[in-house]
Image (cartoon, rainbow, N blue to C red; front, side, top):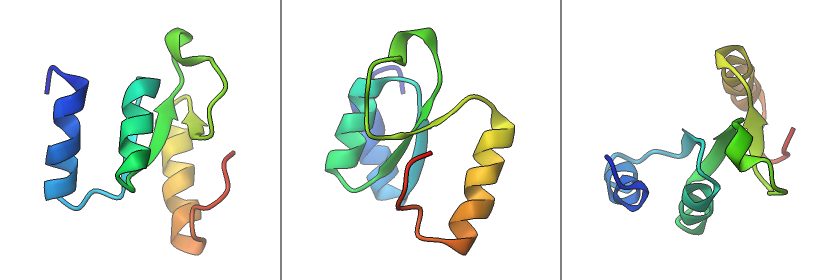
Length: 76
């Protein structure tokens, strides 16, 4: 979208429940609106946060498989 704040209305309109994002500011905005953020690991987002962190597509695939068998409630 160009602007990280513009993502939220689009995600809400489309009923998105989970979103992979590399900006922690955006992750906190998503969490406030009941969208579960998943942090894509980057050098600029290494501070402490409460979100799941993934480093590659394989880890995203594991979360999808894990979500099918659980409630996605605990961070990795």
